[in-house]
Image (cartoon, rainbow, N blue to C red; front, side):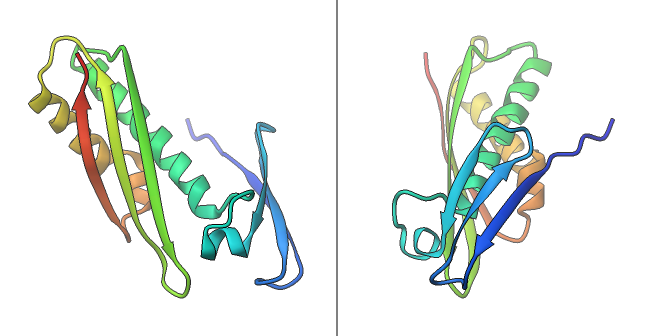
Length: 142
């Protein structure tokens, strides 16, 4: 079954002086966006890259959890951080993932293999095929 996800953006004025908002189609969030947050790291507004990082972290956590469940070792929990780097004039350069998980019945080496597979195969990783995607660490918590 194909599912469609939607979002909407409004932008007012030019790029460097303007501002806007992004709204999730689910109704679960509206976020202010502006160029200064995107290009200079100003706090108080989100960026397309921050939304992309949220998408990558959540997609990766689902892919990892699914693989572990299929292995008969469903996780108690996984916690994923994603950091997407953007450079003005260049674009999105990378997405770096870090994961911690509590999983019974596997060792650290197996957890790392499952994490590498999830990194390579989650749908958002595949959509980001044009940028460097790294798994900075995969730590199994006892």
